[in-house]
Image (cartoon, rainbow over all chains, first blue to last red; front, top):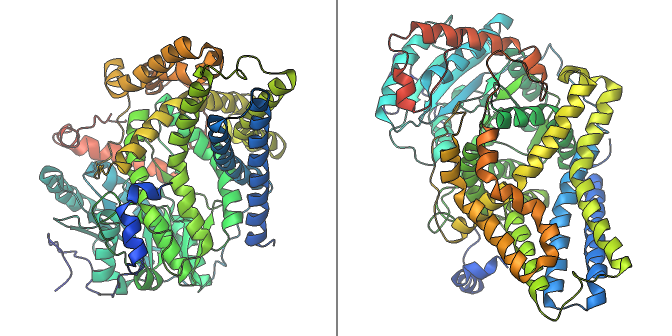
Length: 45
Length: 587
């Protein structure tokens, strides 16, 4: 069985899985960050 | 070679110094009447705005001193397997698949078919277009050696948009390939360029991503050809300067670039940001983030503007340009959330700020305008009305300085072209200088309109309005005056209102705001006129480019295929109607 997502064709893409872990881009929430996010609009300034 | 860090630091110092001088000149101008909070605000705005102008000019000026010569990888380098990814989203399949056919032939002519596969990754949501894609894919499979090398799949749910589309490919098929050459639906590349890129990846095991500078092609309108000229004549110098500063922490523009799949898979899985769009949710401008993540993991991310044979198509009018710009604006402003992401290189963080400022600069200029009118309208202030002679000199120095910053790099690029023969590729010295002047005039006239459009976009994003992901209407050229008016009446109204307000409350600054307000008042005319195309077969004096004079082989091949496919279509206008964009059949 080859990878075909939703529509299958005779020439479906090769089934060769590879892991793509989600990266960490946001820092954990602190009290100060929570306060700041409450005033998100002000953070622009 | 000089360290990129040293070059960045020098450019930063010069830009900071010049912007401080701009602020000082302004204060010098305002001082005779006494400074108040509006003056200080304006001085700060001038410093910030000037800094970004200086920074942009620095890249152009640096690029003048960098060689245009390409350093090719050794031809004996063995090639890894490359998947050429063509993500599409409600595009005209005939136009898109004909590009794939042309690139496939270009690679086959070189004898490298075995190392390159094509994967058309459809995120199309319009079922009629999806059905047409299936029909034209079968057509594409009639190409030489297509079976088993050219693939197509469609996702019914476009989760994560383009980044999610590519990620879906890597998760399911990534291990079959060493590299992924990521294209856009309108991208076109010479086979030799693709082979060279794969060789470079093979030759340098630390190289994670190699970005080319795509040249705009097939433009027909005045606006489109102006951008096409700019991308061919001016952009390379700016890109060479940027590349010099960026070093191994270069950009990714999302297409016409090759990535090492193992590096990309291990480091570029993008999370969904907490909160709702426009600031939360899927990352819209994913490319810069992916470049930053590769650099974070120690991979080299390079921009090589000397790689030729990389093309794309651009918007043909200012309205289409603004629609694309709205999407980019939202994506760039979303990067505010990522400036502090853990582990990023400071240069990548700076690149995020730079991207944000590319859009925030517009409302800042607008604020400067409002503050200037406010300052002039205040009853107890007189500097705009009766400046001293010295002050007059200061403000003129400021105006001249800003003008020079904007146009100096462009004329120096022309001057270099006089000596190194580059201007010959653009129709000769006279045509080149006429085109540069026309580009400067047209971009100056369009700037206030763009300022308004970008300010609106920024306002919408800050108000939390999600712009979504509208499909690009390619090859849509002419805009009628009525359409142009419908899109820009509010800009015209703003220009007229500001002029009226200035005439009543601050007549002394009329002269200063006229250059910005008149193009706003004439916005419908400029947008409509810019979308006009030259009469068929008529060669215009302006904006000649090498690809217009002598199209690249892959461009000619694509034109031949497209003409044949259009002729073969039983209902030639069916696809055109579905896509909603009229497409001329070229003989």
